[in-house]
Structures are given as structure tokens and as C-alpha cells.
Image 1 (tube, rainbow, N blue to C red):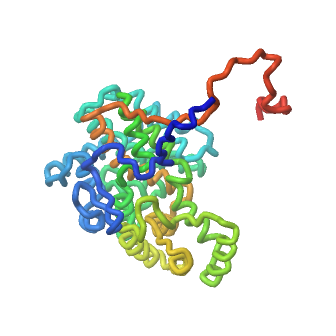
Image 2 (image 1 turned 90 degrees about the vertical axis):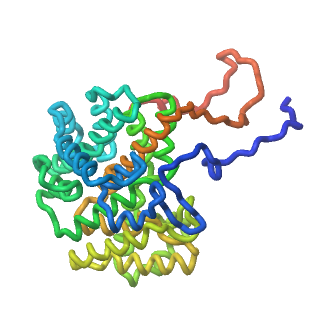
Image 3 (image 1 turned 90 degrees about the horizontal axis):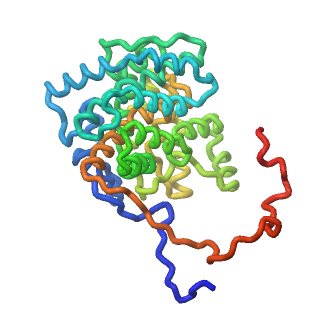
Length: 393
């Protein structure tokens, strides 16, 4: 019989409110809805830096000087082409595969071939991390073109990271405003504390597994619709609404059906996400360049209705969804683009975890049956009368 006097432990579902460790990489301040990377306000970094500078900052603690930045960029450019083995693998994958699954598989293959893969010292992590930052965009672009029946386009060494991604995906580089807006989005998505995928990477690293294993696990976590994929869901919502006049009746139905409205609210922000104004401003620049404000007009109307009715504010996914759509990216590439960006943060956290490691091992409060004997086979109750449940589909 259970000991009814035993005090039940306090359980924090979803680990909400639990402080698992310390970090010097980024800080989310819910009271001011602000975010900093290594002490620098993220909106300022987005307006004054490029993604390569921010990746360096996250890894090394300070922004790079001119010589460091140039060396970093040259190394990234040199690492962009895929090995013949990885290129053949991508060509062999099912065309209907989700791009996130392709990226996850590619990262595993990269780990098999990197000479530093078993090591987690800072120099080795620099080399491995740089290869991931350089080649994941190439993987995403190559698979997208293959599934479209097109040949992959080789990276161009004369283009910066964001311009090169457009080149590899579309075979052309758009207006500089659009390229800059894309780079800003990468900066805004680069890091965000102990979120689900980042914490997954730290847990894997704490076992002394390699960087590629940690990143593969993080990609798997990010694929889940409650973590990544929200900006894709935002575009599905805006497309379902169709026009500004439909916002109110659509929201009436959605709320009556208790639907989750993606792109609103956040576990760590109570009254707004400090990244939103920056992304919205650049998204509107993309809309202007494309001469298409339709999606932002619908988004603005939905945002106003959600604030009035539910007191919920948009998060970064809300303005980034229409921005990526207007840039020309298919919706299922939105989360792989998230990977391109968040790699910088994941790698920073792997470095930090490895530098002062302790195996992450939580406890759980047991609520199952008390100790009991094992019954004979003939005395056991069937789980189900359906004997075909294990048949292959």
C-alpha cells in the first residue's frame, strides 16, 4: 500500500521556471521583453552587424576585429562545397522527404567524415562548427533544387553568406534590400537561451557525445511544431484568411474551435518580443521591394484583433513568415532556414557545456503501480483485441 504520508515532490511540467545552469551567451529579460547576445541588444546587432559577426560573437564572447572577421569569412567560403559522398547521398534521398529530415541526415554524415568529430575542445569545435555553418545552407539549397527537378547550383566564393544562399536556391541574387532583410532574420533567430533544441544539444553534449550528434538531436527537436515551424504555420494562417475583410470572422471561428493561433505568445515573453519590430520593419522593406503588402496588411489586422481579444502579442515567427514567403522561399524551407541561423547558438552552447561539463540527469516523480508480482502468461489481460496492430502499414 502506498505511503499516503509521503509528501509529493513539486513538479515543474515542461521544466517551466527551473534554472538548469548558468550561461553567458544570451539573456532574455521577460520584464522588458528584451534579448541580448553577450550583453549586446539583439536589435542593435541586427541593424549594425552581419550574421558572420554575430556567430563569432556567440562563440567567442566579443565581436570580431577586421582581421578575425576576414579570416572567418574566407574559411567559411572555402568550406561551402559539399564532399562527393554527401552530394551523392542528397541526390539519393526521396524527393518527398521533408527538408528538415535531409538536413538532419546530412549533419550526421558530416560528423562521420570530419577528422575532429570525436573532440570537444574549443579549437576542434571551431573547425567543426565552421563546416556546419558553411555547408548546411548548401545542403538545403541542393535538396530543394533536386526535388524541383533542377540541378544543384555550386556556391559562389564572391558572395556573402545570405546572397550566396539566394544564388544556390534560385540561381539569382535579389535586390540588396531583400538580401539584407534575410541576413537580419538570421541574426534575430541565432540564439535564444535554453530553448528546447538548445537544451537538447546541451544534454547530448553533457554525455561527452560529439558536436554533430548534439546538432542532429537539436534539429530533431526543432522539427517539432511546438518549437520550430511556427513561421510556416503563420503563412498557412494568413493564406487561409486570404484578405483583411476575413480576419474577424476567421478569428471568431478559430477561437470558437479553440484553435492555437501560431505566431502569438511565448513561454518567456509576457508582453511582446523585442525582435518583432526589427523583423517587421525589414519585412515591410521586402514587401515594398516585391510590391506586395497583402500579407502584412492581413497580419496587421490579425495582430490588432489578437491584442484586443486575447491580450496576446506576436513573436518573431509572425513577421518572419510573410517575409520569407515574399523572398520566394517555399514554406517547408522556413524551419531549415531557422537551422542555418540557430546553428550559431547551438554551437556556442555546446562550447559552453563542454568547457564546464557535468552530465545532465533529471529526476522524475514516480506515479506508477506499487511493487507487485509478475503474473503467469495465461493470467495477463490483453492490451487489445486487435491482433493486426503490429502489421506493417
